[in-house]
Amino acid sequence: MNISIKATHVDLTPSVKEYVEEKVGSLAKFIDIMEAKVELKRDQHHQTGLVFGSDITLIIGGKTMHAESEAEDIYAAIDLLVPKIKDQIEKFKDKKTSLWRRAARLFKGKM
Image (cartoon, rainbow, N blue to C red; front, top):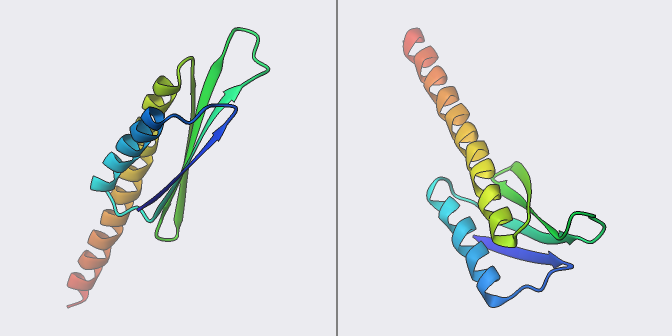
């Protein structure tokens, strides 16, 4: 799996990079991910303080999944991002399994 990390208005420290790789790498146990693009950013025009955001785009086969999150801490933004994309992966897997089962029932009924 290829993980590319882009930082906009944020210093990409080794600890943040390792944290992102750990969190995104944990998604690989659910499905075979070909490519993951993660963007970490800080909103400079926000009036209530520093607001960090994170975006993730996964390419799984021919399907592209995307999720976004915002928080007051970069680690919190990453933590909010993982469950959102995990839900999308589970929905994709359930749909794929349902299609296989439906096709198998149809085939069995014609035999």
